[in-house]
Length: 418
Image 1 (cartoon, helix red, strand yellow):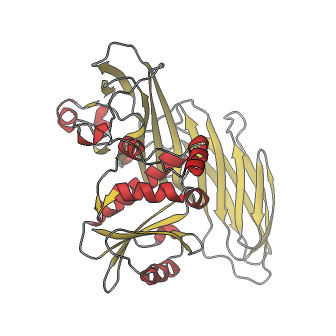
Image 2 (cartoon, one colour):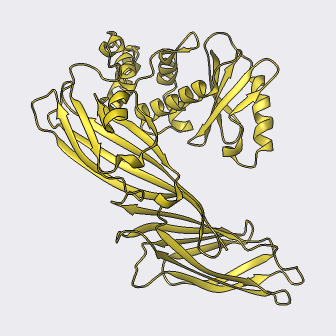
Image 3 (cartoon, helix red, strand yellow):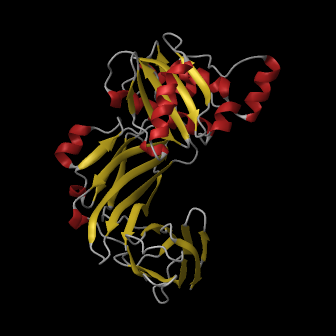
């Protein structure tokens, strides 16, 4: 199974390594560095790299490469899923998963990794079990450990490890019982110069924060569950019930977890919430070009589009840009040729626009193609796919919990061609 794990930062330094079966030399990462050089961006590094004696499987999150080394053939997704679980565990333990935080908590990191894999095979990957085995670091605990020389390792074996619901520990108690669900949708789209949709799809997740006493049994139903056809569930969801009734029935883990993730790719179900009007022209004989873009809401169901930023990679022939925004601030970097416009909120009565001229290289030919425009935005209290939660019911416990549902749509890779 997994022999070793290397953590590599964005500048190519191995800042942490952990070996389970046998010590694998760091030189095996040279194959990874070669692949990294060939890829233009960090996200483009192949997730599986074969070498003469090993396979290197990697994920890139929080500007860190998590590289697993295996010697025998293993289902790649099995290892990649485990690496994502490692990142999620670090995030759960330390709040953020970054190089400085991992270095500061290196002892806890090694203890957690030792529990997550046993002789290279996944053992305890559920957060609540790990937290009973290895207590999360706090300032007080760190001070006590420094003085007494003790560690974060728990005294007792976790109760949930041998139960049928390993994701939930027994004896959970809260004074305030509450369950919050966040429906977050990310829209990826390519819009052509006439405003027609070339491709559009939605990646959605339902994240939950459940703090309930005892062993509650929850059911979550939707107004329109037929939207969810390409779905991935947390292990707590009873799949048979979903298949027959389209209802989510589950005993929730304690705390934060991802209940499900889904994908909507049918073009007719994906509404495009913003539009961009653009007029970008370069003249052959002149050293000046015209630039004008306007951003407006469309199919946003009356909700405010906020946090809008527009970026565009201008052609090499553009020396400088003299632009005036009707709202927000803009920057143009003459070295990287990157234009960035921080728009903020869109007011439908007064649409934001950015107009002006471009200074072009004298004698240079007209660019082959116009630049593409990339958008980022957020819309609160709207799931663009139309997904709506109908009701949340609880069984098995007598108290009445506080329940809350929040919706949000944001842009993923949203590109407008000019």
